Image (cartoon, rainbow, N blue to C red):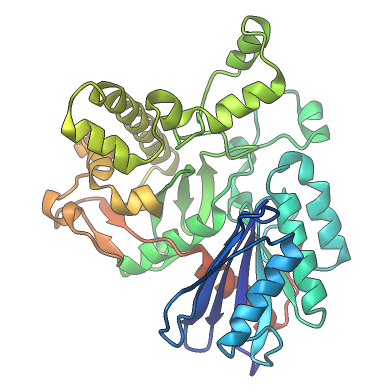
Length: 410
């Protein structure tokens, strides 16, 4: 096909992130963010990457997602990259929840929209915004393929033994309760890039991926297929995160209801927005937590405890996924914390030498935006840092789908 450009849209409840990529040469043409949609203090940040020009910012009310996308289109047109360009092949949309049905990228039609809408009860914060972004883009370019790329799709290869909760099967099926997993585009991209770093094919390696950002998740990837992941029905399960608790005894909720007299909404807010690192020490930024630890003083103790709990949970998942996989070729760190926090990487691997895991202090201290090994030469299991690129993964999946003329099985 002659058109090679893909616009990637990530529509949140009050924001739209975007990138325009040319899949012909792999270049990034533009990127930006519209934030605080629906407020008087809305802001658009746009970077014209193709021309190398300076980033532009504008402030002012952006009423809704339609207005946001029209503003994005206008900024792209200023750079000669408008949405009316015949070089635009498709628009790829990040969709958080695809349930069991969507196992791969899918061209959007009315049936796909209806299914994404049907999944709103299991993704009430994300799927409505994703739907709004798709429908708005359809209105702007009704002739262009709109492709949904699902966060959950990579994890649909999990066996039932990993995906099922041990609750009554009829109840679980009636309410679609199972472990779906999230950050799938990141885990797919990073596991494949790790295999490339090792000079091997994805189907020849077993990888533990640690996606550590404000949201955090781990996955066990066997021969290119996810066999387990730490997030579950929602992104709340699993690792300690910036503001999310991760794993807790479900009875904590009953206890807070009965003894704490807290409502369901209050407990939801507690576990999702007031827990994790923030709940433990008052900060959800790992850089600030490490600063407090390194400087000492009265602020150091709660920061150190939060760090220790974070690392303890991380080690548990590394060990668990090592057991699930049986053989591990690499443990890889990615996302904001994983890529930049050397103390986290060092602490997470420390003491795991009997599993063939070790970190070289000099290599670990290097700051780089490139994929790299941080394990000692000759280590039995590689330890790596691989920057994630979810936008590129969405663009790749979108372009491959429309280029091949395959609508994708839902």
